[in-house]
Amino acid sequence: MLAPRRNATLGLMTSRVLVVEERGTLTERVDAALRRRFEVKRVDVAEDARGEAHSVAIVPAGTRDAGELCRRIMDLGAAREVVLLASSPSLEEAIRAIQAGATDFVPDGDDAQAVVNRVTEAIELSGLARDLERFRDATPEARPFPELLGESAAMQGLRDRLKRVANSDVTVLIEGESGTGKELVVRALHRQGPHSKGPFVGVSSSAIPRHLMESEFFGHTRGAFTGASEERVGLLAQASGGTVFLDEIADMPLDLQAKLLRALQQRTVRPLGSRAELPFDARVIAASSRDLEREVAAGRFRQDLYFRLNVIRISVPPLRERGTDVLLLAHHFIRRASVPERPVLGLTPGAARALMAHSWPGNVRELEHAITAAVAAARYDHVRSADLPSSVQREAPSRDDEAKLVPLSELERQHILEVLRSVGGNRALAARFLGLDRKTLYRKLKAYEGGHDAQDELAAQNRMDPHADS
Image: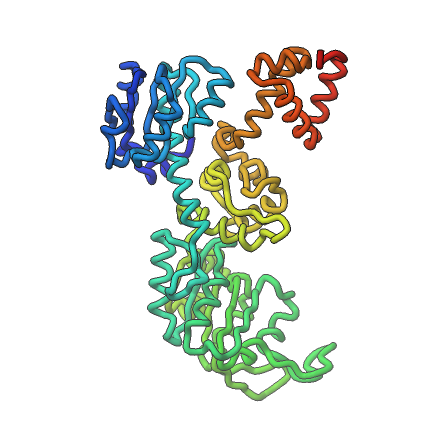
């Protein structure tokens, strides 16, 4: 089951459940359990629900012609999902339910808690399926900052704030956890800002060795220090006419912070070994994954530099606060990672649930790496939960949600091989149990031999009974 916050998002308490009782009967115990959780409507025939939209329809145990009834419910638009209740937990019954078009199947239709659980999951998966369809077919909207993907309130608020400050020249401080996409935000600001035609120069304080940092920022003259064989223009001066991005500014040493503060106030830089001041005209945007106010309080960051940088502060939300943006971003990364020779089209609902359940401590960067790895590992045209990294699977719901998504042909294959195993490999006897003629069974078994697992199973069965065809 998903976390309560996800259930609240889907509005399970107000979901409408339709019970269609054509020749079937829903027990009062199951009815009472459903009514405690959902808004329930019971009808005698499917046509009585024409024109009404329900989250899930239930076909009770004992219903004859369940397949036809499921199809009618779908054709009438009475519900998007159909849960079929049964009276015996048999694989044959499950196959018939899938053939009928049911979304899910409850082997014991009198088990009130099992019915409620399956209906709840059908509603959750229905919501995820709608999200997946929407995200799979989504195209970038004609709006500011189209590169900042996301439909959550947090991302809409971020884009609104960026829109208000994009055309100004003021210094901006970007805050956010590691991996949230701070540099993407900065580049979007640069492209929309008044210096968009100028250079974009990014520098991370954590990526430059301490002894080279001053030279990188401010430049140096030839012979300023050992190894300075030629003059170098610093990054601040290189950014003139454009934008300079000071990433992980909290990692800058205190003595260099003082020189940076002076440069920002005077709008000039003095290269190492030079007495001349060089002007620079660049928009300054700084970013930090650490709380600069705490760094100031701890004495690790200059308060005056903090005030100088913190003219406009913008926070980039962590991925865990962005709801179904996780799925939108996942589809974006799937499209990027998929190759024409073996295309991957999207996510199964089971994989989507796993992504939604994960806390994403590494944020968007972690999601991108997870999807790239999953696409490389995918055996089918959709990423399944089993394709995702183990760290994501560990937080996924314990129930195997992919079982419901196995193609009917694969479920049939499993059933045929299971029957064949149960009769000791005797194909003639298996054909009688399955209701197939021998030629049809042999043709199917021959087709299964294309798979290594099926080949091994059939070989084992033949070894077990050398007269299996008799």
